[in-house]
Every structure is written in structure tokens, then in C-alpha cells.
View 1 (cartoon, rainbow over the protein chains, first blue to last red):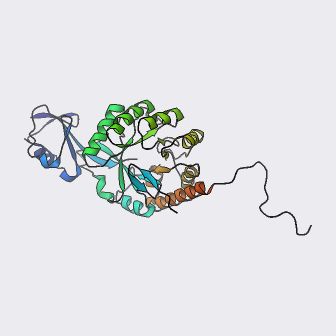
View 2 (cartoon, helix red, strand yellow):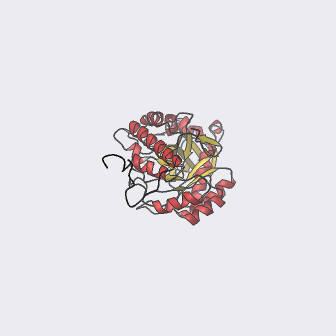
View 3 (cartoon, chains in turn brown, blue):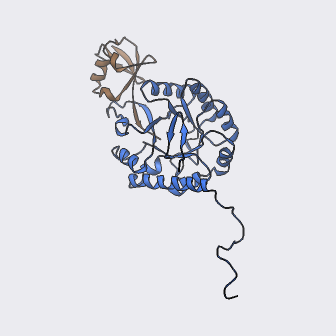
Length: 65
Length: 255
């Protein structure tokens, strides 16, 4: 299914956010997920189903001044 | 001496704020924090680079150090507000450094958009530290908008050119009732000391520490300079004069 991931069109096989994080081989503790403009807490990643066209942002804190 | 800086309900005994940008190895960050005893450090929020994997800089910051997420990357008020809200949702606390930049050559902040974002985020309970081009009128407006401090730049970000906008920063320090933190451009410890001698409440130094050959000892050097400058300010320096004033008695011997 086609979603917009970090601003770019992306085809995912995952049905929920937890699956997407695994699919992208990310360390769950290090990332923040925003789905259609709202933050989804880690505890809810498995329940949060992904639908066609969802806008998902996966963010992290990096070095900066 | 009991000289505490209060900001957003927190008390700081060390007036050097630091940043996490541009360290050649992130493992140097906790060592630098230990050597400098800096109590607040900036971090930035970015999209994960899927080729690199997630980064999580927070693992390198001891729990007793206050996190100051910045809104770097924001080009207007709305983007800065969004970043601030995400940072708070992500458990970063209430401190936020507003940094709104559209100009890319000197990375000058947009004071107008920064003022708007300050108003919105202060009303939402954030401790707002706006990074601004030094301007006394804007500083008054930022105070009215609820800013916790003003953070005028000394010179362009990462330029190491020191306190080039000294006159205006002095005006702000003399007239504004909230803490003034000189942020950006400080390239050497003597410049940090200069800002503190002027009466700045704190300085924020990132690049000058992180790109040094030895960022750990440079962090210590900046911390000592900040402490010296602060102590000099509190001790009230003598006036400058055009001619000499003898420091030894000129009479009573040989004559």
C-alpha cells in the first residue's frame, strides 16, 4: 500500500506502525512517529493501522546547536 | 558565592549552555558535559535518514542536564510551533529554543516570525528561548510575548567571529528584565568572557567547542571563561580612562 513517508511516496507491506518501524530496520527507542499530523506514542504503534495515503513522519533527535 | 540563574523553574549554577552539533564522535558529548559542567544542551529534531538508521542523540546526554530542543529547520512560525509541540510530546520537557531561519548565507533569524512563535508557545506553557538578531525594540516585544529569555546572536552561527553586535547587545542587557543569553558566533573563551563581563546572564556555545581538536578540554576552557567573566561583572570593573592612573604611589621615595 502506498503512503507518504517522510515526504516521499513509499510502498509498504506493513499493516501497522510497529510493522513499518521494523520494515525500516529502526530502533524503536530512538524514533518519534507522527501520523497525519498527530504524534503516536510507542505503546500504540501496534494498534495504529496504516491506511492508503497516510502521511507518516518518522523523526529523531540529532545533534544541533 | 550564591549566583543562580533561574529559567523556566530550573536553577542553573553554570552559565555556559552548550550544543550537540558537529561533534566528530557523539561519545565526546558526555565527556564535554562532565568537563564543562554545562547544565543545559541543545538538540535538533530531524526526519530519520533511512540509509543511516535512527540516531537518538539523547543517549549521550546525562539525565541531570536540561535538554533544550531547537526549532532549527523551521522557516516560519507555524513550522517552529509544530517542532516545539512534537519535542514536548516526545518527552523533551518545556524548554524550547526558537530558531527560525530563511536566509541561508548568514543564517540570520527572522525576528518577526520568532516573535509570533514566542507568543503562541509561551501561552502553551513552554519556556521559550528565542534566538534573535539583536534589536532592543524586538526584545521588549519578546518580553511582552512571554519569552523566558532573549538570545541575541553575537555574530553569524558557527562563524567564530565573536561579539560583533556588542553595542546593541549591551543595550538589551541594560534594559531588558529577563535573562539575556548570547547565542551564536562565540569562537573563543575570551569572547565568552567578554559577553559575561558585559552582563550577559549566560552564553550558548556549540561550534567553538565541538570542532576543537579537543572538545572536552575546550568545554572546560569555555566554562572557566564564563565563570571568570561573570565574576568580573559581579565584582564591578573600574572605569576606562584615556590617560594613566598610577598603580604605585609616585611620591615618598628618592624624591
